[in-house]
Amino acid sequence: MDRERLLRLSLLLAIASIILIGVGAFIAVGAFTREPYIVSEKTLYRITRVSELNLTFVLEPNEIYEGEVIQPDSSIPIYLSLVRLLMVNYTYSLSQGVASGGMRVNVLLIHPDGWVKKYYETPINTDSRSVSKVFSLNLSDATELMIKLSKQVKAKQDMFTLRIVVDGDITISHQQYARRDSLSHALDLKVLVGYNKIEISGNQSMRSVFEEKSKSVETARLMGMSVDSARGVSLALTTGGVTLTLVSIVLRVNARKPERPEEILESRYSQAIVEVSSINMHSGNYRNIVYIEKPEELIKLSKILEKPVLKECYDTKKCDYYIMDQDTAFMLKTNGYEQKRTEHEQVRNRKQGQNDPE
Image (cartoon, rainbow, N blue to C red; front, side):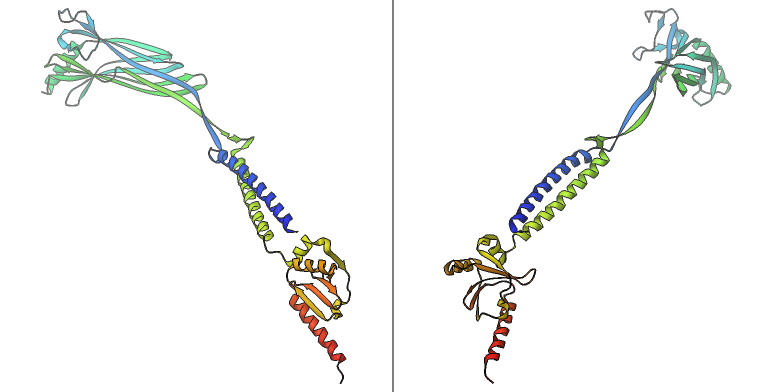
């Protein structure tokens, strides 16, 4: 393949390699900057449960508070001597679904020394979205009981804690889903007998959210194929582009190697060349061989002598290019120049030896 064809092929391969690498890089940017799988979540249900202990203090006739009842307020003190009853309204409710099961309300009297006396209890059963229970506590009666018990052990009698505890084991059902709700809600009333006050600690309202989600995994796609496949395609295209680039470089390097004299002669001056069969020039029918290094000089001599450049091939890969003028051959100096010169000298010496008298 001549030099021009090699350069043309090298250019085409270089263009193809740029296209392959560009397309491969474009796909790679999309494929390697995203996850191969898409994980999505779907909420199956979301239920809000509210547990409330609403306290209302029923008062003795007095001139301090404006009404006959008061709600707990941190800015307003509650005086023990003015409280006739404590009304407790417990409510269990769901935003959706049905609660089924049982709960129990316990009222405990707790001494500072740690011992506990159960003062009141009541069950609550439910099979609906919400349920309420109202009951009353006589704080004066509870205070007298704790003073009596404290005297028995000669312990402090000036303070105790009244704790309201709601425990339950509830099953929450919604559509085809069901889950367990282990309820525990406590509220403390610290009764300061010596200070004639009641202090409340704890949450009167507890809110919890129950939800369940399902996850689904989908194969991410890019340009109609999975991301994993797109990654493989991008690597294959990039690898192919790099390979074509290397082949193009090799072809270009080979095309730029210095041309041999006979290649220059064939490619540039083919019109002046006449291919001939053997004319016995290898037998030494000429006396002299003049070697010419440059093809241009051989062509110049051909024009001067008005004779063609003869091409004689004696091997599939070896040819001589020369101009015959009487017994002199003007021959292009090729890679086989040294071998041909040696062969000619041997033939000429052998003929001279035959012509010399003994």
